[in-house]
Length: 253
Ligand code: APR
Image (cartoon, rainbow, N blue to C red; front, top):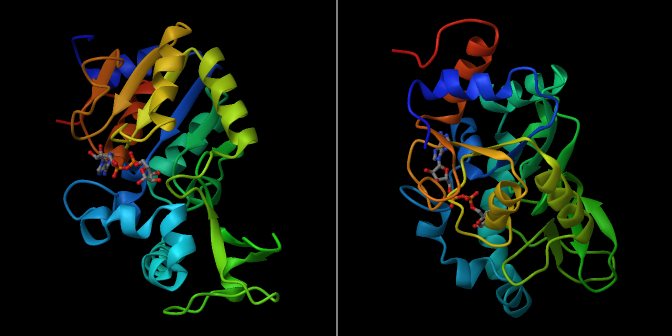
């Protein structure tokens, strides 16, 4: 683990690069009003994921699972990108950040202007019929409190990866390629507890990348895979790193 001001160190690691990649989790969207899954006020504290977030649970009782999904659709629908989402788009615009691999299904990276976004767990903005595979924009079919249906009569599922479902193969291929070939991996707002996403930092590290973790708390990565831990919220840390990159001060005192 590197000593000294972590923000200045992160800026030093990013300066002049063109091969940085970011891996993001629910923590980056907490300051946009979308709760994380675990920890204090986490969504899984309210809904048992084994009852509300597995493919099996959805097939067994889709109307019940839509109670949780409706809450997520509403939260994602009302949310706007924050300074961390915008900061990553800015790093991409500066040519430093090459891609964002996100576990989030809220579309906020794209809403902030990021172009190369790999949606590892899918996206809430589309619904798919698990009988005839027809797809619909969520806002066209979703009504709060009801399970949306397909023209074929089947209940629609959001185009997100539930537990027990495979990662979309193209997203998995692209994410692993980015991890294998990046120079710096920024890991922002993930507890790194869910596989295979939590393996991405290990793939990057094994391929020689420097892993920089941004999280107010320590995670399973902090004392194992991370080379640098920036202890702070996503918005504070990303904003401070951008300031430091432009020659300003380090961690705000
Ligand atoms: N800024 C940065 N990080 C934050 C912030 C913040 N403002 N607030 C919380 N965090 C951190 C927490 O400390 C925690 O480590 O974000 C992390 C959120 O962890 P989880 O809730 O476990 O979310 P995530 O890692 O994205 O979950 C992975 O699990 O439930 C499934 O499919 C779901 O994509 C999700 C996957």
